[in-house]
Amino acid sequence: MDSCDTPACQSARELFQDLEEYYDDDNLYFRTIGSVLEAADLLDLPHQIKLVVAQPKNEIMVHCPVRMDDGRWELFKGYRVQHNNVLGPYKGGIRYHPEVKLDEVKTLALLMTMKCALARLPYGGAKGALKIDPRAVSTSELERVTRRLTAALGNNIGPDYDIPAPDVGTNAQTMAWMTDTYINFAESSNKVTARGVVTGKPLEFGGSAGREKATGQGLVYVLETLLPGMGIELSEQSFSLIGYGNVGSWTARLLQAKGSRLKAVLDHTGAIINESGIDAEKLAKYVRENGGVAGFPDAQEASENTFYCTPVDLFIPAALEQMVDLEHAEKIQCKVLVEAANAPTTPRAEQLLLSKGVEVLPAILCNSGGVTVSYFEWKQNRQSETWDEELVDERLQKVMRRAAELVLKTSKELNCNMRIASYAAALKHINTVYAMRGIFP
Ligand code: NAD
Image 1 (cartoon, rainbow, N blue to C red):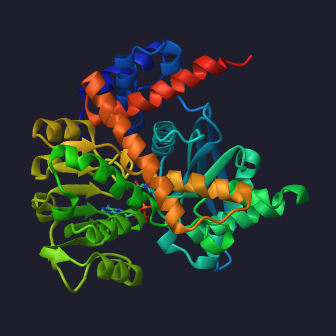
Image 2: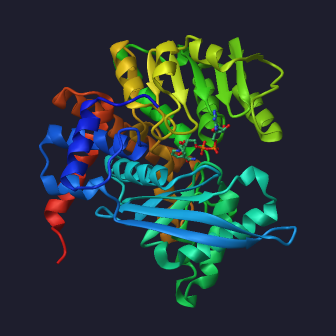
């Protein structure tokens, strides 16, 4: 990682020195909280708000023993970080990844607090993770570990308290196992509403129409709101993607439907390029069947270097954190970097991109479509309703437009970049609610 000398890092360093707490410039959590504190400084928010958002409320760690198919027992480490709940129940995805670390989960929980506040959803922020490679275990092992994790989390999750959802390495099936396990432990009088413990469930089991594509769909609504003001027409753009999972593949298919052209993709299996366009639908089917983009017949294989050097209008990271570093930013040639993944850009890379005239649209705005439709699912579960996709899309569009316009307005008012503006718009709301609620007792 490149070292950090931004105002954001300076704000974080000062606060954690005051607290006499551990601080590390190169740590993703401190880098992220730094940008949030920079926004708090711009708004001149009270010191106590900075203290409250700088550290999560609860950090839960569990160890789950699971019997593997060959009879061995393995121990899996799980995390749930509950960052803040001033606006409502904790909300955030569960990630399955072999290299996940507590600080990564803390970062993602903090971003969820900011995301829900920006979208004005009645939720706080949380994130969970299990240290496992989901591709390296069988389906029955995955089911047992998921049920064991849910049992270990116990009453730390619940439809009125903390509501998980899918993230990297988890999907609707994982959510169905979690929900079923939770319902088995619920009081008989609560079994109907208990399914609201998790969102991103399969449609047939309390899921919402439009949830699977929601993050990509929300991103398209953000672009439709903001690009015309930059003189960019969505219908004529070329784009490249890092990641072709849920978010990446839906973003590609929906942008293609708007007339944009997918030029290049990089995922964990390799990179592919086709200057005259990659069919996003065909690629989605290929990735479902083959596990990654490598070997896709209608494109040329490329090196990672060629991928980053390929000129496009929109560059869209939709994989893991901090993948766009300074070295990559030097190569990237685009008009707008659209953050579909959480925290995909290092602070130094962002500084360089901005100085090259690239607009950077921040993750808490661009990918908040997922949690917004999760909110719709939770609402439908509570009211025993089923909305059709048209209604979901209409309401999603409203939320995304409002959030995008708010970020643009805030960036003009505070004369700051879009990331700091998005945090400022979120923090302003959090600060207002803290001022009304006060602190117990
Ligand atoms: P996913 O598991 O469906 O896909 C992850 C993608 O990342 C895969 O295509 C994989 O190949 C790629 N990848 C992994 N390691 C890589 C590497 N080293 N180099 C290149 N590519 C690599 O996950 P997802 O749900 O699409 O999530 C992607 C991002 O979007 C994450 O940051 C996640 O937190 C964020 N996000 C997801 C949702 C959602 O609804 N799923 C909502 C908001 C934000």
